[in-house]
Amino acid sequence: MLSPRDSKGPPLPLWGVVPPGVVFTGGMAVHTHDDIDWADRLRSLRMAEALDAEPMRAAARRLLEGMPDGPTILDVGCGAGGMSVHFAEELASGGARILLVDATEHLLAEAHRAVSAAAGDKAIVETIHADVADDGLPKKLPPADLVWASRVVHHLPDQQAAINTFARLARPGGLVAISEGGLDFNCLPWDLGVGRPGLEERLLAARGEWFAEMRAGIPGSVAMPYGWNIALQRAGLDGVDSFGVLIHHPAPGPELLREFVVERVTWLAEVAGDRLSGDDHKTAAALVNPASPAFLGARQDLFLQGAKTVHCGRRP
Ligand SMILES: C[S@@+](CC[C@H](N)C(=O)[O-])C[C@H]1O[C@@H](n2cnc3c(N)ncnc32)[C@H](O)[C@@H]1O
Image 1: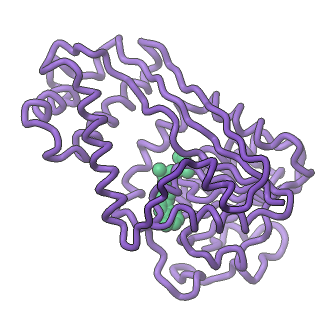
Image 2 (image 1 turned 135 degrees about the vertical axis):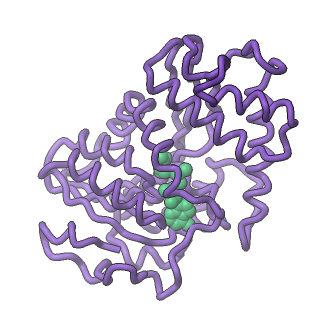
C-alpha cells in the first residue's frame, strides 16, 4: 500500500493508490508463502544490516554506476530497507524514486522511515504492500532502472517465475540484481568449552534441513534444479554476471556482533527443532543465557565471516 506519508511530492500514480489495509494486487490477500513471521525478525534484520553496512554500501555504489540521473529503484522484498538506505545515500543527484515492496507491513513502515531519512530530498520514497510472487506486478509498478531483490526469491513458490517477473519490472536496459546464495555466516570458535565441539556446524546442518522442508512446505513449491546465473538467463536477461561481497568482522568485533551472535544462535536452535540433539539444545540454551557462565555475550572470541553473492543481468 502507498502510505499517507507518501502524499508529499508529485501526485501518486493510480497503480499504487489503495486505502490502508486494502491490497492492490487483484484483491488477493497479501501474504508471504513461507510461514515465517517476518515482522518478528526486524531486530535481527537491523543488526545484520548494521554489520554488513560497509561492504553492502560499496555494492550499492557498484550497482548504481552508469544509472541515468534520477533513477527509479525497486527494492523487492525490502525487509527493513537497509540496502535502499545505501542506494539513497549513494545517489549522485536528486529526482530519484525508490519503491519499497514487501508483504510485511511492519517492515515496510520501518523501511520507509529509514530510507526517507537517508534520501532527504534526493528521492521520493514509496511503499508498496504486495506479494512479489504476483506475476501481475509489472502492470502495477513503473519500469525500473534497477530491480534489487535480496534474500526473498528463495521464499517464493516458483523462483524462476519470480525472476521472470523481476526481469519484466526492469525498463529495457535496466539492471536486475538479486542477492542469493554465497557463504553462510560463521561466528563461533569450534570448541566453546561447553558441550560437544562443532556446534555451529551442526546448527547450520540442521538449518539446511529446515530450509529444504520450508521450501517443500510452500504451497505450489516448484523445484529450480540449476543455479542463479541460469535462472537470470532463462528470464531473458543479458550480460549475466555475479560478484561476491565479503562480510568480515575479526574477533573480538563490536558489541553489536555479540548481540547478533546471541540472536543468531537463539534462532538457529529454534529452527533446528528436533533435528538437533537434546545435548546440543542444552548447550545452545546455556550459550544464549546471560546468567550462564557460558554466555556468548561475554566472550571476546566471536567473529563474523561470510559472503553474499549478487547476481546481475540487464533487460535487453
Ligand atoms: C530474509 S528477508 C530479506 C530482507 C531484505 N531484502 C534483506 O536482504 O535484508 C525476506 C523479506 O522478504 C519478504 N517477503 C517474503 N515473502 C514475500 C512475498 N511473497 N512477497 C513480498 N515480500 C515477501 C519478507 O517480509 C522479508 O521482509
